Image (tube, rainbow over all chains, first blue to last red; front, side, top):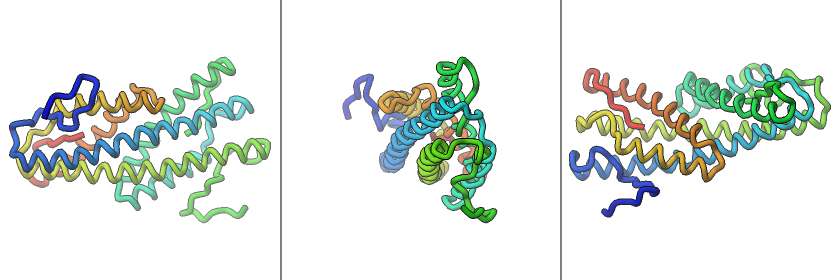
Length: 125
Length: 125
């Protein structure tokens, strides 16, 4: 297997190479290949989600709507926790995940709002 | 529009109801509906990712492989940053996101390892 050039992803990159039985390494690489596919999907999906929240940010700034929508947020969190339970994902993690995304959305909306109105926050998760 | 029962998600839940022009609210709800679809996909995709890392955790515990794989992690982060740039997502956010997921994976692997070996960490992002 030849080295990948610097800018190219090597799906076999590992500090374990040569230190593990070949069949075990192949099994590990097979699972990692699925993880890599999922990660690419996550990145593109997150990009799409931020496009949607950017649209909301502009809409709110344009119509001078209040930054937060607590009624919406409560419903969102309850739904994500239920979906997580259905998917056998820890509901507490799903909630932490949503909060992680929200903090990035707020950062984006601050940028939109600063550009348009000169400073009011417009978070929308 | 009738109230949803407590356990059901109301996609129109909002503290803005009645305080915004109807056409603006409808536009907001349309974008939120896309966000809700994306969030459901994210939850199921994350559940699938954790299934994969759980398999890796068991494989590593079974073969007494070292917990971390720095060579793999470096390649993963570089790839995610490139994918993020392609998707018009902030590469720094993509890296923060991977680190957020990794910290949860480590938590899972600690649980696997404690069950099997009595305590050694087996992180695999």
